[in-house]
Length: 402
Ligand code: ADP
Ligand code: ASP
Ligand code: MG
Image (cartoon, rainbow, N blue to C red; front, side):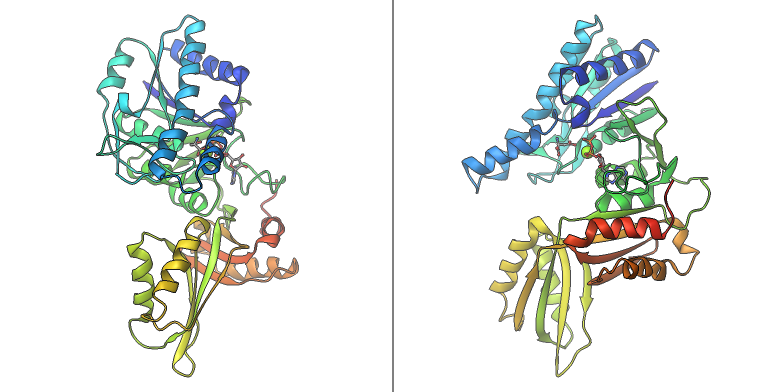
């Protein structure tokens, strides 16, 4: 059987950890399985390389940044191949070019279009452990691209899908997926299982334990994921279509600090104005999340919405440039906000989740600035200084503790 194992940055942070990963891979190999390993860069390498890029040129092209930061994965992969080789087991490291992992043309945030299997299958057939660089793809210009921060998870799922692997294990620095980030809420509980839909909401709303695109892809190609610790040998969390775990009202609480709020004030209260604003942003590929529109008064209205912080300055600049055209009186923005979300399939059949959430925030004295809901989640925007307290209060309010 083919097994894909992915190890994140802290799991390969130093020589000792790399040897630990080598041992895990060899154990799987000696059990007679075909082993494909996907690695992230060692420790904080990616952050350090990005800092270096910004220091040498604050306006560096994303193409060059991608060229730079993808080297991190190449280092960890080559070292793991050597560590496995030192134990007498054949291993080979491959980058996205050698595998041919085709991505969309955009730098910094590529998506996989197609992944070839010939080279990997060939190496597996000759009984090698195959180690593949996470987080990178090759675009139609034959340039290297990255998949967005945390993208190595997506590399692992893509390979598990095309190779039809029996297992896809994501090894990380926590024991699984918890009801909240265990670093913020020490009482958070590890989940035995979680559905793709719930995990997708959690991941796209800030729980960085899995890259949201990896969950999207796992759902699409029916890849069952196991999230588990690279250091403790304990069962992790299974991410799959349905779970039989006792029905909980909500599955988890998550926070996203990478968010900012923009308000366009005094816009004409007539058909087409919202379209004008959001079409402009969509054309610039700026994703908008929570949207709130005020009731019109005296022929004008206000629209507020959230965007990712990295897109905020660009969004404001574009709106400022088109202020007259869109008949906007004033544009205001706020960066020190954060989103808190509760997620759970249980809320579909249970009324009262929203009021419980608001009660918990009220008891903690936290003001809500915006609210948005979907079938299985509720998101509120709060001030960034309040977010950690808010997560703890809500986690407690829903009695998610151990
Ligand atoms: P890796 O380097 O292995 O990819 P990440 O740092 O990307 O690891 O993701 C693991 C981190 O995700 C944990 O250290 C934890 O702080 C954070 N995290 C956030 N929300 C959750 C959650 N609900 N369950 C588990 N971990 C979470
Ligand atoms: N090394 C990359 C990052 O830090 C990819 C990953 O870790 O998944 O974002
Ligand atoms: Mg990660």
